[in-house]
Length: 444
Image (cartoon, rainbow, N blue to C red; front, side, top):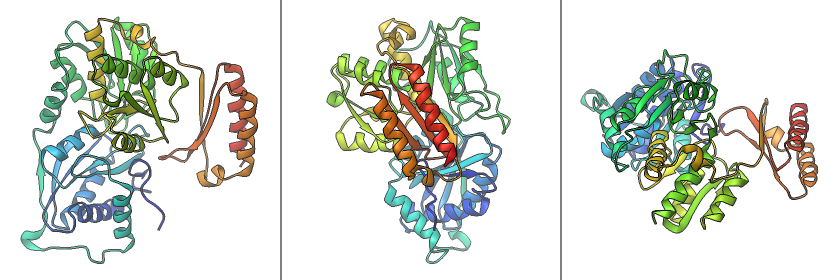
C-alpha cells in the first residue's frame, strides 16, 4: 500500500484523492487506533472553511461512530484549538480536516493523540496497516453500541480563554490589521485581539467555502502590507487557512517572517530568564541571519529537517521549549503542544508592549541574508530527488559559492513540488544558481 501520511497528515484533492470513502475508512481505522480498540471513547473533530469540509467531516464522523466511538464536533476552528480541546475534553484524540495553506481544491485529515501532540510515525503506520488489512478485526457495534455525534457549543470560548491566559496585560493602544486568509481564524482572531483591547481591522475574514488562501493569508502578504499602510496601523498579522502559522508586517510595510519572529521572542524570553536550556530549535530552511542573531545573544540553535513535527521531536528530545519554522509555524511548548498562529501573534504583541519598541525596531535584531526560493511542480518527486544529474549540479553550484552560502533542494512534504533554495550575500549569483537548478529539475 502506498504511504498515505505525509509530513502533515493525509492530503490530496478532495473528492478525487481524498474521497469520502477514504475519509470513512480513516475514521474507522483512526478511531480504533486512538481508542486502543477498547470500545467507547471520544474524538474531537474540527475543520477549516473549505467547501469540501462538510462532505469529508460527514464521512469521517460516520466512520468514527461506526466503531462505537463518539464524535465531539467543534465546527470551523483553528487546528491548534483541536489540540487544546482534545486535552481539555479528555478525548482519546483529535482530528482536523484541513489542508492548511494549500488551495481550496485540496483538503487533508490530520490526527492528534490524547495529549494534543501530532501522532508519531509508529501510530500513523498502525492506522495505515489497519487500512491495508481492510475491515478485518475492526468493530461494528449495533444498537446502543453505535457512536454518537455531540456538538461542543463553547469550543471558541474555551480557545479564546486559553489564548488570553498566556499573556500578561493587554494590547490597548495598538492598531492591528489581521488577515484571516478566509480560513479557520476568520472569527476567533479578530475577537481575541479586540477582547485584549487592540483596535482591530480584519481583512479576508468573509469565507465562502472557496476563497480560503486565495491571494491572502500568510503565503500572500501583499494585501496585508497595503492595508497596514492604508490604515496607519502599528503592524499587521497574517494567518494561513487553518491558523497554525503567523507572518507579520511592520508599520513600514516590511515583512517579518518566522525567523525574525523567533529571534524577537527568543531574545526577549532569554532576557526574562524564561528560555529553558537557552536553546531554540529551527529547520534547515532558517536564514543564516537567524543563527548569527541567536549566537550574538548567547542562544544555542539546534537544527532539524523541514516540518514542525521534527521541530517538536527535537524540542522534546533536547528539553527546549521554543522553536519553529521560517514559514511561521512556531511552537511555545510551555503553552501548547503544537504550532499556533494566534498564540504566536499574542506572544509577539506582548514583546512589543513590554519593550515599548515597534515591530520594525525589534525585527532589526536579525539581518536577513539574501535567500532565493523557487517551487517547481514535478510529476515524480522521488525520481527528481534521486537523479545523479541533479546531485552533480548541486555539487557544482555549491562549489561556486566558495563557502559563502548554501544550497538546499528538497521535496515538499504535502504537494508535488521540489523546492530549490540558495542563500548567500550576492543576489545576482543566487538568481543564476537557482535558475540553473530549476532548469535541471524541469528537465528530469
